[in-house]
Image (cartoon, rainbow, N blue to C red; front, side, top):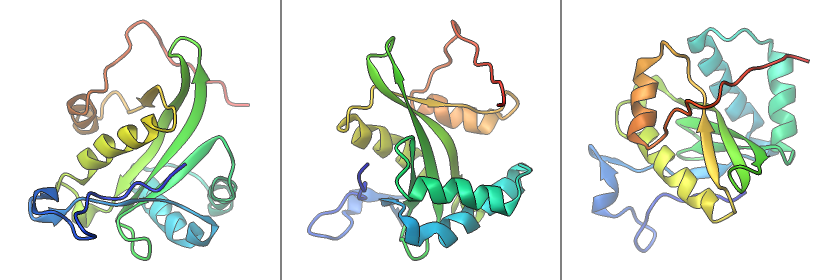
Length: 171
């Protein structure tokens, strides 16, 4: 996968590339050296969402992803040395959709910088960039009771697929 730079003009953010006075985010493909930064963000997200997972399991999953597992990618949002969030995608293939698909496994933005359009910008720029790599569709799962994220996803042109029900079997 590729780094997805924030919009710039001669290396500087354009005036039109600010949302509510804040520059639009840069997405950087996370690498093995980013494990500690990414793990800190994921641990914060999991604590906020009450996702039970031990640190060893979480770090092993992230480590495999950052070491180049072909089944997914993690992007840091914002400056690499001090990211404000992350996005993790898992990749699949769909005959019905004509090729490679991705599922937005997790997206997290630090609470102190939320409500500034960063999530919307990420959900706009990420699919555009990945389309160039052959992505045909981006899926997202969200709790049925989570109306706020659902509202954002609908504004970003994600639509429920009434004809399918996702079922999961843990193995």
